Image (cartoon, rainbow, N blue to C red; front, side, top):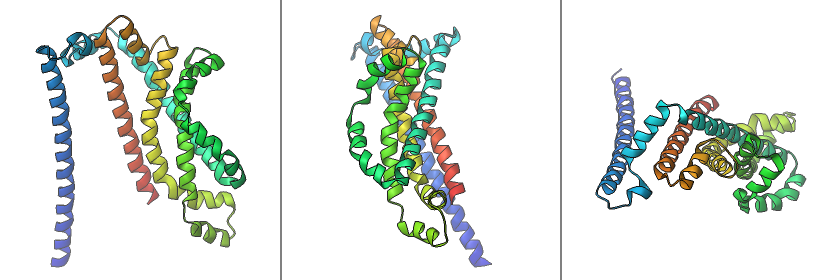
Length: 269
């Protein structure tokens, strides 16, 4: 009884230690953020930096509040967020599907291997004008940019993870008469789920880059459009406001993927 109680106390102490560490990390993160914005505001107020070029946190927050109040930011924010989510989902799904197809055929994998390596090395952003000409100057081209920038790296990473699964798992299933699809479903895919989730985290950033670049080139609304417009009219506060909104949205999307990872890994145990 005494032994059980001691073990329980140790477990509670361990959980408290984890919570204390998380709280400490969050406080440090918040402190660094406040210091950065405080230093930025001070540097702008004392003219250590050019306030016309670098604006200031107070101007940016004021502009964001004003533009949300008159509704003009909602249209741009909604367009970019929707495009990014669609591009993110499409890029990830296509990458996983392509990796699965390559895993099912080693011959196809050998044939396409050099092409995938070259495609990964190519700057996808440079393909933007070609995509716009091919798909037209609209949402389709922007979403295609968001998907294209993540699909190749997803294919390579997930396919490598498929290949690194211990072949003994597959051999055991085959000895019980399992088909190749059953081996994939029961052994290969569950074993590579952590890698797929990690790829999702990488794709969050890549999708935002692809969508913003697409909006640079062709869009008439969205945060990428606001950045370009801000440069054209020398409204750098608008540029910094758009960048701040992108950073906040990307952080929220990343946290959502982290929550999804927690849920999936819990069910996968």
